[in-house]
Image: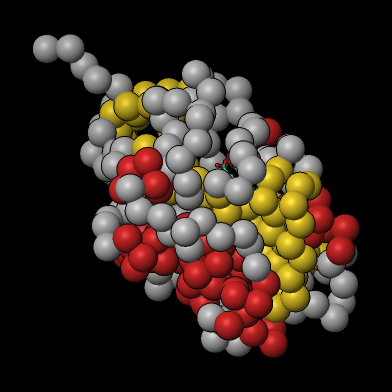
Length: 261
Ligand code: BTN
């Protein structure tokens, strides 16, 4: 049965419910907006969830399609205590937590497209967007928002993304309880994001999509064809071009290059 988002049901399944405050709404522009507008000093983790987003945000200014009651649209906001550099691997950490939770529920292998895309059966079923506000005096974040979007139930995707995007139900025919999965993900993330390290990177690397493949890698103003080698412990993509290995901090793998024989 497909149930509505429900704070009580999520709370019942949390390991440390007292650490979380929830805001659950029917329709929002973006749960990130709600998180930012409502975050207060007394919150350890404020979790904002919505049945629908009218302006769901993805990486690189893109839209994250957030149809009504068919996905998890969740933002977790917190105040980091450590210096900015302590959180540079947070997106790979969250991607790992989401992948682990999905693997537990589905008993299937999840893949991760560097750096933040969650894939099942070669289709994108979710993504993670980490945003923050930097305090230039303290060199700390005023806050960090972790936005997690997962396509759970069947839905109609627009023509331009229907070959890339899918949902868990579409791929597996399973009807997952969103409240259960939300609790599982929050438990997996844990209640001390100030203490993340690189221990998750082996799990992340084992699920890396397009490893050893030639891909088109897009940067802000240019693009190049490279071979994906791996991801290092700091979450940087290791690529090879003209026999030279280099590490890339940001950019986007847009597609695999298939050479004709
Ligand atoms: C991506 O695929 O590029 C990242 C998608 C992140 C989507 C989530 S849904 C909850 C939160 N609110 C948003 O507007 N975006 C994130």
